[in-house]
Amino acid sequence: MQEMKARELLRKYKEGTLTDDEKVLLESWYLAYARSKNLGAKKEDLENYLSRVKPPSVAQKREINFPFLRLAAAASLVFILGIFIFRWVKPDEITTEATYHALEDIPPGDNRARLTLANGSSIFLEKASNGVLVKEGNLEIIKTHDGEIVYNLVHKNPENSATLAYNKIETPKAGQYQVVLPDGTRAWLNAASSIRFPSVFPKNQRFVEITGEVFFEVAKLTNGKKPVPFTVQTYHQEIDVLGTVFNVNSYKDEDAIKTTLIEGSIQIKMRTNPKQNVILKPGQQAQLITKTEISRSEKSDIKVLNVDTGPATAWKEGYFSFDGVSLPELMRQLARWYNMEVIYENPVSDFEFVGRIERSTQLSNVLKVLELGGVKFRVEKNKIIVNG
Image (cartoon, rainbow, N blue to C red; front, side):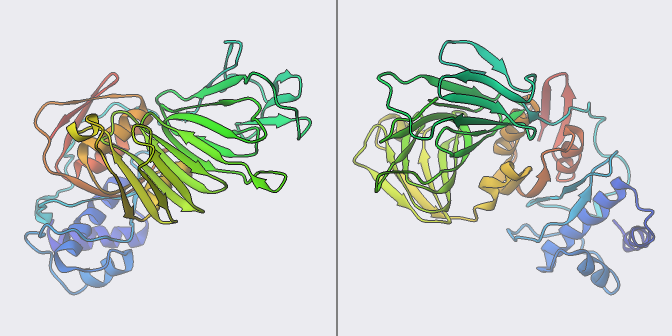
């Protein structure tokens, strides 16, 4: 994009007449330019540098973290935060002409889930009315006005039952849900996830099983003076906690189970090798590789990394957050949230994405931003066709 065109778009931006597509164009050009000069990536930087420098011919490929710029979502007033694409980009080749195919609009996911009771009966929670859904003895299952399921014990210290009655909450693709467990622990389920738990926990033990991705705020609980442990089991590992905040990503189509600790302390151990365990501190992430020959031979190790916890927990706050993720990993997230199948027409190029997008954004707007990096998409019914 030529300097004159950039100045024209900047003028329209100041006047408030810039269209959504022009905002994407201007800010994407500046991101490419800023990468080449190690500059900041704020709108005031954009204005300052455009006043005295010319755009570079080629932006060098480098991995730099930028503050997030807002990019207006096409055809709406909702803003999505820009995807920064680490790639070879020629800013002067970006034009105002439409460079992407017309994309069929697919709405984002929303609050939906199925509750399966111990007797096998099911309740589709998005269709259920607010109020008490189930009342069995000491237990009430309530749907709140906020769309949350709460397990409420009428008497806080029930006697242990000889047999446990298990409930299960499952979200489909394009669904998410929140639940308050009988002990007061809060759990957020991402798309295509589940949690199975006793409708009433025993006095000395709390135990849940999950699939997919779940964010926990574990309530501290004691029996007398003794803390009552809380155990989360996935298909490859167990997590032992007392009271803490953490996220578990255990989708079977991902290469690793990622457990990210926000507050407190947790211990993680492999189910195939209980003697191997790690203890996490806040700001750490445990990665258990599950899709290699090593893991299938039961010799995989748990790797602990110091991380920015934001990308691992942003989904709970209503965002996709990418920090150097590959195109296939990004597309798996989109597939789950928009209930789509992803098909690759060509081998996948070496893309890396950094940035943030609101999960309330229509699929077409997400793909338009991604296409600024050179990936091409088309949507056919429930399929996203990728041409890298």
